[in-house]
Length: 298
Image (cartoon, rainbow, N blue to C red; front, top):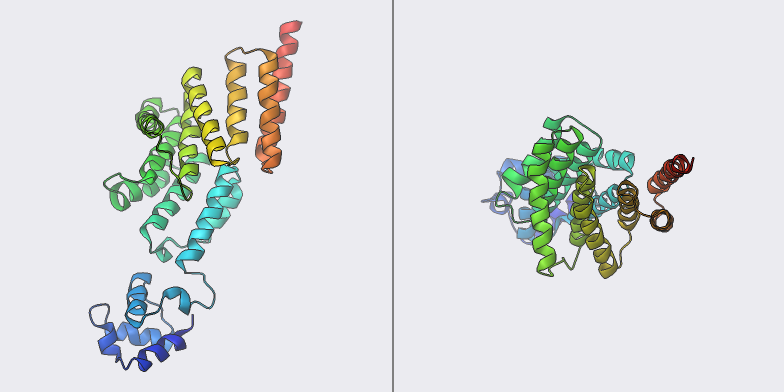
């Protein structure tokens, strides 16, 4: 961090440490920063910089604490999560200190990513629910953002994996209602990662419905997800949606030609997205389906 730039600006503006820190922090805190490089919280540093007409990013020689850098890190992690690269996601999240994230939307994104990863790799419920409680009870206590819905999804995934289906249903009932309202209002989000997050909600809700053998509801959500992918020209979720559709087709006794078509589509999209996880899952499903067909013909 270029502390000299900060000090030079303060002196150029003829501001004493006492005057600059007034109402923001103690003079001692500012002195420790300027003399010893002891960086205060991002909130304090941002206010001090604003008073000098600077931004925190302008002081960063290496932008490890900048909002832009953290956003880019979290967005990259979110893409890896969609590709089911859980080890990469875990390693990347472990490199981020939650206390360094000042912006509330990025805090919610961090706790959502860590919470849902923990649910997917079967961590203890208290670890999962701690992350989601930060969103539901603190950062989005009015439950107005999509991160609340993502927290519901992650909670539902956790309970369904623990075979506590009544609790899982409590959360997925909320996500179904959200999806229906969003799609009925033709209000699919238009910017950022928000529509990808809607796809996350669609996928895991569809997966849960399939697990409880409600293939009709699951397939409708899959259809909605594929339509959203087409509308937004994104392919991240297409391999997983097509694979789930193929699994549903097998379980509901669809024609072999339809099952084969869906598996081929899942594999094609997996290769486009370099999703090796889905490629392996398709190979395993083909083997299982071939064994089923052989048994039926014997």
